[in-house]
Length: 215
Image (tube, rainbow, N blue to C red; front, side, top):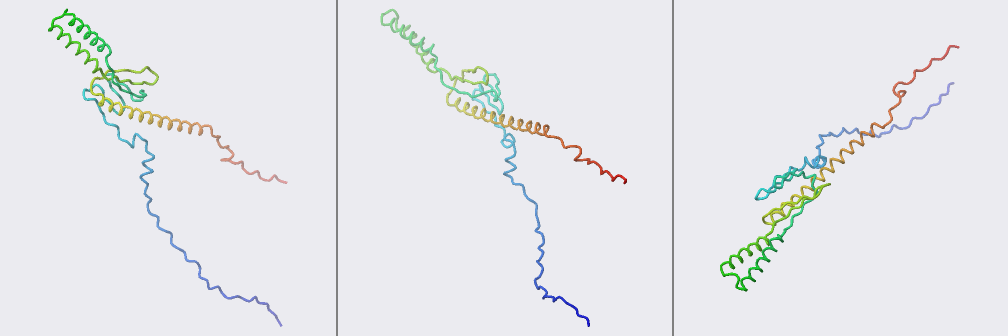
């Protein structure tokens, strides 16, 4: 009589297999405009500055240069500029001294009325001319002596032009510094790549396996 051992089989799990979800559709990713604009250099992001000049044409300012009385300067060779009014002391002295002399001569009856009036008019014009003076423009140059120019006219007009000049000079120096930093970074990357150790030849061509020697 045969006896057989059977392993009892438990109930089949009624748990359904997990549903497989279809992959989500990936659409085209749009590049953010802000990041793209941030990677552009400042010269490409900003348009070039327009050309401005004084009403009499003595000073002409472009995006890269400055022309004063026919003399041209690059913005990158300038440090800064300033303008201030200057009085002609020589004409002050001549006018005041002449006025004093003419009055003394007239009071001592050494001059008649008509020559006295002509002398007073001439000395008064000297005083007015000395008081009017001029505007002195000083350009501070990098590594050189400052340049000076006499610019007649309204002081407020020259102050606005000099303010715009200083703004463009500062922007030109910032752009030059950014270009230099980018060039140094590129040179440093090339030097690092040149100094990196080359991989050994064994990594590409390993030694072939040596067969077992015959017994």
